[in-house]
Amino acid sequence: MPRIAGVDVPPNKACSIAFRYIYGIGPKFAKDICNELGIELTRKSRDLTDEEVTKVSALIDRKYMVEGQLRRQINQNLARLKNIRCYRGIRHIRGLPARGQGTQSNARTRKGKKKTVAGKKSVKQMR
Image 1 (cartoon, rainbow, N blue to C red):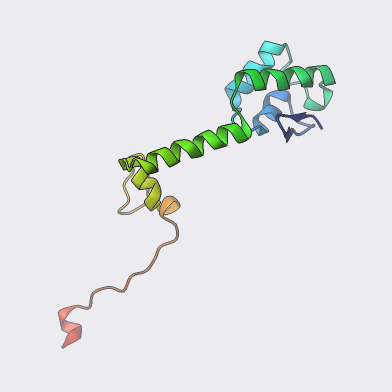
Image 2 (cartoon, one colour):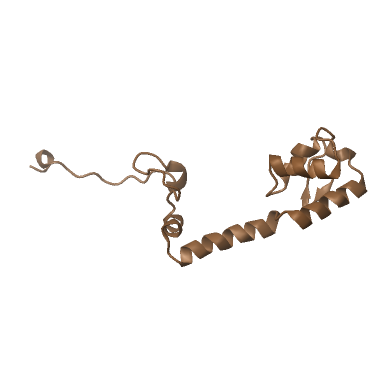
């Protein structure tokens, strides 16, 4: 099982798919890595030699921000938005959608499970 950028990539998957298990590497970057190093897209990751694994690791370290470094930067960006109290930051603080989605009838994923609030009693029920 090859270990690249601190992640054990699955040995039975094609390299273009296996590289995607690294946080920050998606379909395009995985194909770019394979093409740049001359690795066939369909070749299984277990068939990579130690030299090729080293080259892949070096390329990822040199060219891409992945794993812990990327997560840290994303968290810093969110913290900055929250500190300057901009609209997006406030939406993140309150746990609401930050990209313009409506919240009156949807947004359950972001808002969480529905919190039932006691309804108003009508005038007829009070008499």
